[in-house]
Image (cartoon, rainbow, N blue to C red; front, side, top):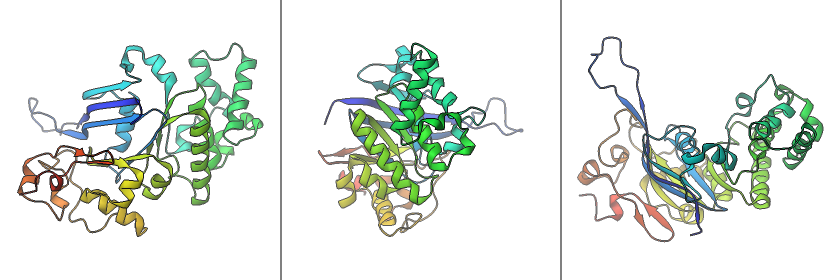
Length: 321
């Protein structure tokens, strides 16, 4: 594997739930365990996919990777160092593209003002003229005309707004970008255009991506490696080719079967997704797994594997009995 650019080590994120009006003052508030003990690395120049159903913790993990939220436990390292030592420098090197370009762009600002803002915050460009030139360059780089700088977000199509969001992320020349469902809010006809743009930019600018999506077919085409997330934990990690050809974890198998059959949600899984406030003991997937045994309810499976795939499942670690 190439040198890691981003390293997450046993990262967790818990949110306290607001106490009920009649709850005792000394009673412990329940917690939403959005992310639980995740270790993940993303190599320099790699596109790492992160997949799972809604509510699996993907977006929270993306925010933790950028330290937009502090982890409850665990650590984040970037380029071998602690990014919290100089957050301003880290913000220049790590950016995010959001799912909904309409809500992530300031409607009261022109596109030019939106793109100039990160330049001003990070003191990039010696003058207004230099910044205007950089804005025009950014717009051209994402396939928009330079005169789009005078327009407001509501005057653009959804695909054009997402191009502006991508341009904003590129403004200060980052090395790493978290892409949080960047195509899911777009028409199908536009999704491929944005995906192609992301690949072209990644190759031309030597970028590293964490690509969050529920679309396994897009992930297969776009990503080098993929991590599968369920109820706050990573259950399988491997090359996109290996995951597509032979997924090992029962949950990954169900996701792939749903993608292959073009279903909205995986079938063949029993029961409902457990609450992250009270996740099941042991393997969080065991109440819905057809292969679960007594051990699955007792022990959290460790991640084990080879050069191609790592899987956290007792089926590959001595059995489920």
